[in-house]
Structures are given as structure tokens and as C-alpha cells.
Length: 567
Image (cartoon, rainbow, N blue to C red; front, top):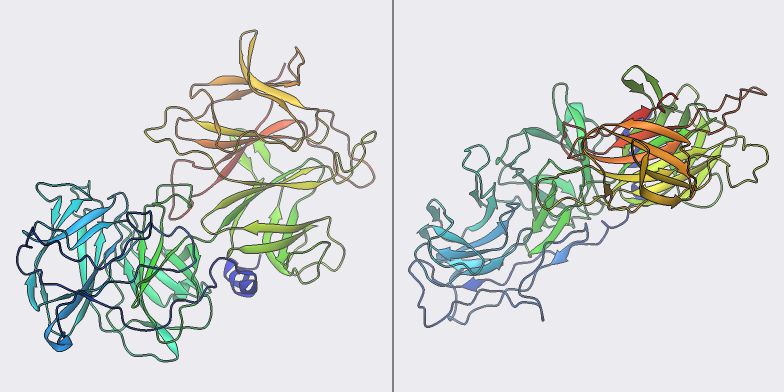
């Protein structure tokens, strides 16, 4: 199979959501204020930010599109001698901390109020010398939640102070802290300079593979938690979106990737890895991502590249290869990049299932997919594909399930496309429980080519309790997921409204699991004929979105084939 890095590079032209140019290079207007002593409570300090009409604060940016922060307001204090003062701004990159008010230590008026996760303040102009800050939850009074160590500011220098870590933790490895970083970017008129900061409070030491093209030779081979790549910044092109791979392990392997916006010539960026890992949903607000902030205050929250989990449920189909390229109707010989190689129908032996699922991560965009029977090598076959997906639109930070379903040779007596081979695309959107999960969540998908509409429910003795009713072929239950028992139970499938079970299955799920339960195979399987394959018998394919160990990024997905209970 062609490496995913090659896919990322060759499909760069299909990118969406990340191509807006950042604001041009320049210097922020700065707020001039003296934070060396407690503020005069009778005269509120100018915060330097004019809120948007109707909103108390900027909200975290949840897309890859750069969004300019509010323009700081210059307090009228007379001429400022830039050489006699320092500039300082704060970036909130501490997931789960909520919005905060930032005070000079001992002051009673916030210098920067209501700073939300994923945002940055404007620069404050401060006198040189030692200073510390008190941090409180937005609107809170009383003792501060955190007081920073003293930072000594130098005249004429600029500082970006990054709030990182977990406010609720007492563990030295991940607890809340501030990272005071003196700026010292090397001038670069033709490209951008990027200072990468590892603020992922639960992420291991990682490497940074610029271009996502060679994890074994990552440009930044090792970046420890709460470390950065240095004041001068890494030189990067400014005129194109970039792929950035995150690598770990020995030997180094890519675990997730991002698509940056165009960085812009002459710009200087802090790119901060932040968010939390243990989430299968990469679109959640505090999921692992990149927070990019440039010298003008432009902010972009860059989510992980989308992932597609391809499931083989074609009852009479052989192993398949998938080739991606430009979107559009019909087969397209320009779809030459192999993104899935030799995906076979799931087979169960004892408690082990092999085959049935393949996962791939690609840049956001719209793709066409041509599906061929498996052939050795990574080159696109010369003949016509067995099936084409004209357009598959993929957004950053999202995960998708694409189910290859039904029959290559439709069953006699049924009119295509009712049972002809097809692909059923779904977006992963199962609800994350607000508190500790108490039951697993499932989405049921009807992908059996010869089965009528069905009822699916829990069977206890002779009592059938429907969970999903009258699910037609190709349909799925609500995307948020429906809770089912965590204890072992019997799942029954019946024709819609029928009194008898078509098949029953032994199910045993954990409370924290989120599962796609896919009805697959044929109720009336056919024997092999004319060089084709015999139909797979009716069964369930359970696709687990969050099996026990969650890796960096989306986590490993897996599939288990569940065969019917023998009568």
C-alpha cells in the first residue's frame, strides 16, 4: 500500500478548510499599563480587548480557518518608549481550565479578564523587572487558583506566556503551569518562522514530521512535554498549506497528522500542541489539536486530519483495494493513490476476528474513491473498478465509517440497485456522556443485501423488547448512539413487525464502549457459481470506536464478527 504520507502530499490540492491566508505581518497595538503594583480599584484597567457585540469574550476557534482576535485598544498614557518597556501576552492552552481572569499578583482588577481556552490576549506593555500573575476562574473572587512564579521582563523584549497543564492535577508531570517564552524569532521575509510548543498535558514525548512524509527522519525528532523548539523558530514555507505529522515510538511511526493554513511570508507563529488524548472523538472541544497564534494576534485552532474507517460488508465480494483522487461522477483514472490495500471480509476463528476493517487518515477535502478487487502491488489496475464513490467529503477533526455493503452479483428476483454493491457512509457522532458512562452506546446499521426492514431488540426468555424498530436496508439508527445493557444479553433481529426471530446473538459490551452494530451477510446465502464467491451468511459486524487502549489521536478501532447463536 502506498504510504499515507504520499496520500497527504499528492492530495494536497483537494484540501478544504485550511487555505485562508493569515492576517499580514505587522505589530499589534499594545495596551500600556503598569502592573507592578496593585491596581486602583476606582479606575478599572483597560483590558486591551473590545468584546464583540453581544458576546462577552472570544470563543475558541473550532475550525482550521484562522480567525483574527479583537484588536487591542491603546490606553492613552502618552508616548511609550518601546526600549524602556516589555511586551507580554497570554495564550490559554490549558484544556478543562475554563475561562480565566489574569491579575498582576496582588492586584484587585484583572489585567486580562475572561480569557477562554484556545484564545490569546493582546500584548500588554509593562515596565521591565520582576512580575508574577494571579489566575482565577472568570468572575471568581478570593484566593487565586494559581499564582505564577516570578518572571523577570527585559526592556524592549516581547514575551508569550502559555497557560498549560491540568488545573485539577497535583501530579508534577501534568499539573497546571505557565510557560514564559521570550520571543526571538529570526527574520524571514520569504517564509514563516514557527516555534512549536508541546503543551499536551497527557501526551508523551513526540517528534514533528514537517510534510508528514518521513517519520523516521522527523525534522524535530524529540520534543518533550512542556518543551519547545527554541526562540529562533523553525523556518517553513509561507505560501502553502502544510502537512504536519506527529510521531512516537521506536522506530518512529506516525500517529496523527494536521493540515495547517497558509502561514504567510514574514509571519511568526507559536504552534502549540494542546488538548487531551483519551477521546475517540477528535472533534470535541478539548481533543488533541494545534493552537496557532501569530504576531498580529491571528488565532487558528487546527484539528486533526479526518479518519475514515472502511468496513467490508459485501457479502459476495472478494478482498478489495481502494484508490483515491479527484471527486466527481464515474470512475477516474486520476484516482491513483492506494489508501486501502487488501481489505478482506471479516472471518472469525474462535474468539478472534481477522480482516473486515481498515483505517486511513487523510487531509480534509472531497475525494472520489474507486474500488477494485485486490491485486498485488500498489498500482491502480487498468480495468474498470467494481464500484465508485463519486464524492466523499471529509472535515477536519471528524471520523467516518464507510461500509462496503450488499452484493457484487445481486440476488435473483431483486432489482438493482436494491441489493447491488454500494458504500454506506456515516459520520461518527456518538454522544460523550457528561459524567462517567453507565452503559455502552450503539448505532445499528442495516447492510444486509437480502434482508427486509428489521426490528432489533433485547431478548429475555420469550420477551422481545425492541431497541430499534422498522430499520430499512441501508438505514442506521440515531447517530448519537442508543444505550444498551452493559451486562451480557441476547440481541434478536426480526423482520419488521414479525413475531419470530430471524437470528439471535450473544452480546457482551463494556460501559464505556461505543459500537457500530452492522447487520451483514445474506439471510439466504447462495453457493459459489460462475467463478464468484459464495455469499457470507447473515451475522453482525461490531465496530468498536473505543477499545480499551486509546492511542495518540483517534485511538485504534477494531471489528469483531458476531455469528448467530446456533438453534
